Structure formats: structure tokens, C-alpha cells
Length: 269
Image 1 (cartoon, rainbow, N blue to C red):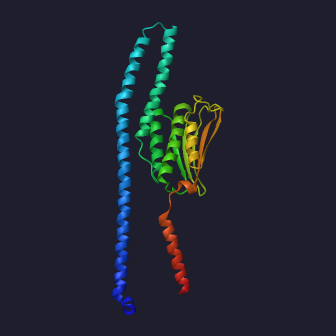
Image 2 (cartoon, rainbow, N blue to C red):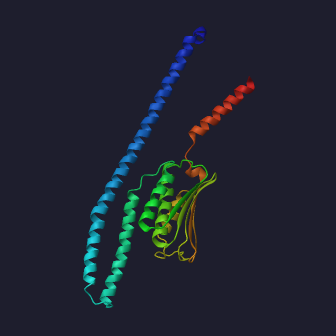
Image 3 (tube, rainbow, N blue to C red):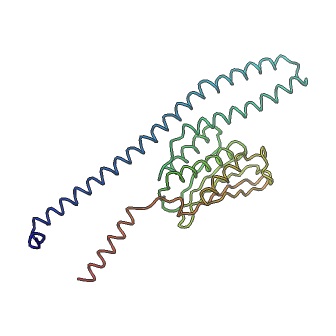
């Protein structure tokens, strides 16, 4: 038995079994990746369908109703109380329609996963720039490390909400988004040079969804801070611990282990 173990045939059998085992593990990994990809693709298709339905039915119908109300209001005497009331209603309805269009845009945004976060932010920022005609710039500082899938999606939702608020309410001349891939923290900054917001951050004071943004950040072990000065602009800061948001770097870990093993081998030699 001992002689057989020491023969080249046994070594070849061992190598063959290892190769078969690696092949099976590789097939399992590919199958899991394909399953996750199909699930995300199906989710994206559902979101696209909902977005088209909202745009083609609800928003278009509301736009038609508003046009009819506007035509009725124009028949009323200018300066009358009824005419002023209808104008105020139409102004509020325009804001509701704008929010609805932005929600449709959010539904049509690609799902965020891994290193796709920066591309998703760039797409949203430039889409909002085209809609509001406000210049937008995005900056990425540090190596763009892949983010954990679920955490990356939460980070994207927080940043997207901050961008929507800046474009819609800040009345800014420029809007900037910066992603900082730090070692201890992943940080996101949304800056504008607009009118600023109320210090109390009350609902309707110019920055919506702040409570939801903070709740999302707290669930990840992070936080959201808002800095604002009247007529000087606003900065929204999101920080999330790196150990929570960065995806495991399996390739780097494997290379480090291989380098350490080669180093020990050379030292023994």
C-alpha cells in the first residue's frame, strides 16, 4: 500500500481528483452567479414595466386633467380669488408631476451592484442635468472598490435622493457629487451653491426625505449630516464604515496568501 501511494500513478490520480473537485466548485459558483443575475434582470424588467405604465397612463392622464383645469381658469377674470386659487392648485400639481417623473426616472435607473455604483450615479446626475439645465459634476477619490450588493443599493438610494432634492429645490448654479473610497469609511458628498435650507429641516422647507435617508444610513452603521447656509448652498454628507460596505476582495486575499506561501518556500530553500 505504501509503495502504491508513492507511485506516479497515485500522484496523477490525486491531481485528477483535485481538478475534478475544482471543476465542480467552479460550476456551482457559475450557477449561483447566473441565478443572481437572472433574478436581478427580472427585477429590472419589472421596474421598467412599472415605469412605462406610470408614464403612459397616470402621469399623462394627470397632465391632461391639468390642461383642462388651466383652460377653465383662464376664462376667469384676472386677479379674482377663484383665479388665484386655481393658479395655486396648478402650481402644486406641477410639483407633484415633477416628483412623479423623478420617481419614474428612479425606477428606470439600472440596479446597482458592486463597482456599478459610480456609473449609476453618473447616469442619474446627467439625466437630472438634462431635465433641470443645471450643470452637474461627479468626482471619485481613491480606488473604486466594489461595494457589497445590498449596501451599495442603499448608498445609491440615499445619494439619489440627495441629488433629486438639490436639483429640484436648491435653485443652484452648480451641483457636485463626490465619492470617496477611504479605508475606514466610504463617504458620499452632494454639494450645491443654491439658496440653502431651513435650519430646522422641517418637511417642505426645501429638503425632502431626510428622515428616510438617515434611517437607511443608520441601518448600515453610518450617518447622514447636512450642512447649509442661506444663499451659500448645502452639502449632504454620507459616511458608511468600510468594513460594512466594501465587498470581500477574494482575489487580493488569494494573491496575498500565495505571496506569503512563496516567501516561506524561498526562505526554506
